[in-house]
Length: 165
Image 1 (cartoon, helix red, strand yellow):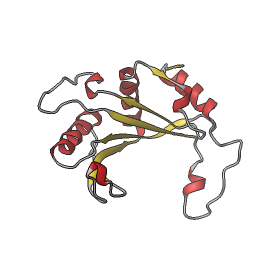
Image 2: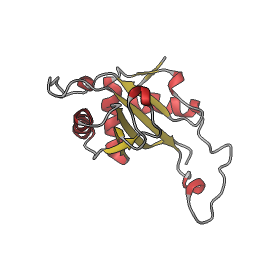
Image 3: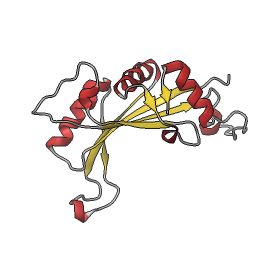
Image 4: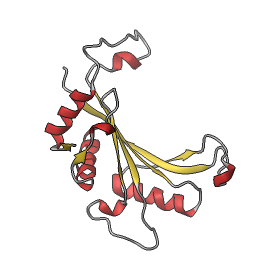
């Protein structure tokens, strides 16, 4: 009951502008993950970067279940199976970046598309976390059941053969 598991993986590419580059970023997310991307919009206007509030400037997709675990294996191999302790938060979740989408296997450089980097955000949880989020009979989690960074690090080390620096 206390063994951690992968809840979800969010893959995010921020382009900083709408238009053709955003469409190419969506194509890359779709080919790499197999999931359908959703556009992310700017939260506020930044005139220095010529970004308006509500303008789509990025895209993301969320993976769950077995597809999330297999995708995490490929992401960690693209990141050379190394993570640092700074990449883990206080709840045991972690995030890392991939500088070029060509680091994935079977992805080649295409001059029409260019090179995009992406952020990989992994949410780790224990069974029983639904108690915090459900609508009926919502309750708090005991401190013993909450996931700590050390628990998440040991789970990732043994499950995915990752070296923590």
